[in-house]
Amino acid sequence: MRSKRVLFLGFAVFFSCSFFAQRERIAYLPTFDERPLHFGFYLGLNQNDFKLNLKDTSLDTDITVVPATGFNVGLIVDLRLHKNLNLRLEPGLVSNSKKIMFNHLTTIDDNPRDSIREVASTYLHIPLLFKFSTDRYKNIRPYVLGGISYDYNFSSNEKGEDNFSNQFRTKTHNFMYEVGIGIDFYLYYFKFSPSIRGVFAINNEIKYDDSLNGPSKWTDPINFLGTRGVFLNFAFE
Image 1: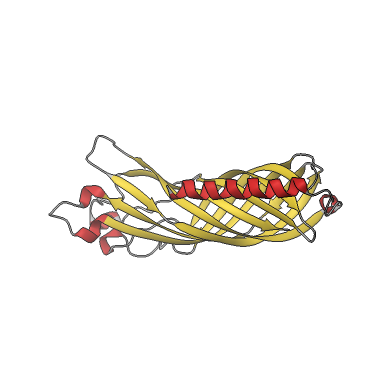
Image 2 (image 1 turned 90 degrees about the vertical axis):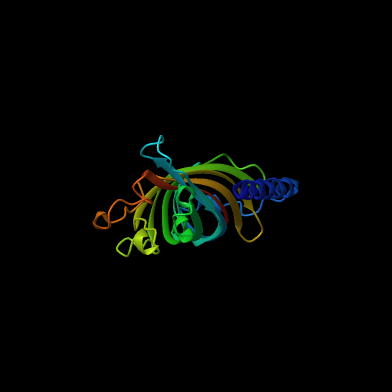
């Protein structure tokens, strides 16, 4: 439901800005896109989740993820490759949290706190993206983008204590691919670019519990755990 709200907010921003931009008769920043290199920054919201695949779906294992809304902030370095193609580096910080509910551990024999793990994460997010833009129409220019990104998870706790000590661990180094759409709006002093993006993990992010403590009822059933999320970014260039 929250991811739908993020999408709805993004589309509302797109349509309202597009309406006002098309009414403007003056072409703002007419030579902006001729620059070989320019810089900017972005602010935004994210709704991150985990994609879960279990090793054996026939087992009595029930795991769900409850996401929360987080924040993004970062810088933009944009290199012009062609009139309709740019290469962008967008390093930034991403903060969010998720709750993992181990519903199969809520029986009377288990400690209630064993069934919930809160995963609060702060990432150094470094995407390298290709941006494909249409020709400019008045003061708007739609685009699509796609590429890969590297995430350094400051909160992974990869080498710390595991679920037997109430700590759910993930890997520190992760790779994603992302795709999205957006619109450039040319204003009097700067270019404003809202975009909606989907971000999807490439590698398995879970750090399995130590086998020295015996079979793990938290991580052993999981075959793959990877981030998937929606980013709503507002760029100023």
